[in-house]
Image 1 (cartoon, rainbow, N blue to C red):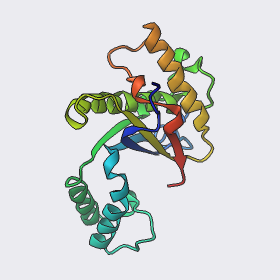
Image 2: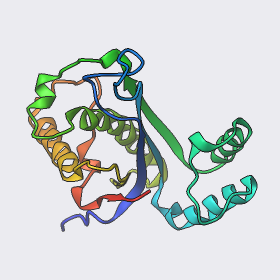
Image 3: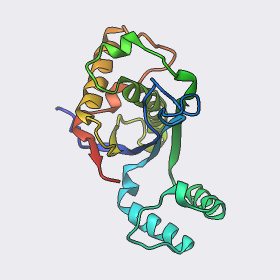
Image 4: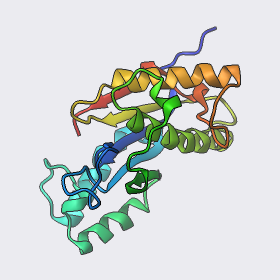
Length: 205
């Protein structure tokens, strides 16, 4: 009996701040890209998916924000940022972040560049993020689902101009490498059995 890829046990909401341009980087280069690129994932069990709007409304109520608006952390005052972080800490979620950029100025990864993609560095950072996310969810399956294998639904906050089909293709490429035992970076690896391109989506934030 084939496993239904839509039967996922976890959801990871992925967003980024900054841009992946490595050729020029502020503040070293006056007209360079952002000093940092930060990719983050908020991970939770799928059973909480329908509670998410309630959680967000509660945060907006606590902050006195319009319920129809997005919550942009960078636009909040320090007091409100602390309040959001404290509220988030009470929820059944786990957060991960990959931070990189200025020290990567001018860097090239010829192996990663071999994978057809306009933004190999973004996809490579996604790979580092998903290494942590899949490792965490795999370790939780024993506790959350009595050891049953569960997949992770990935939802990207859409980044203008980025082709998510290339990100999906990159995860498939890594899966082939993993199965062949030919991953170049092997300190950690994405547990690709927990992923399926059928449940990788991208949406406006």
